Length: 79
Figure 1 (cartoon, one colour):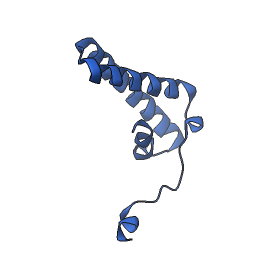
Figure 2: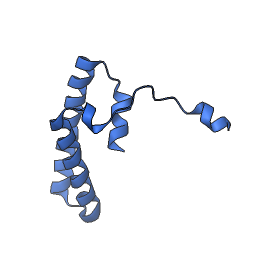
Figure 3: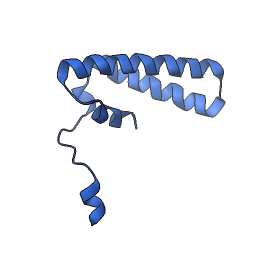
């Protein structure tokens, strides 16, 4: 029972519908590239994954500054 107390409460649920569609598509593409990279370990896929990650971080920065949503909650979507 004590473990429930240590888990922070997520006051605001974040779903796919609360994000802009281009961010959702970027997340889908990132997951697809990551899966393929993990299977093949191809260097081109790793570069693509890193590029998509930096694009997504930029989108999150813009979203966070415009909507004041914390970055920690948005990271939950990637998991």
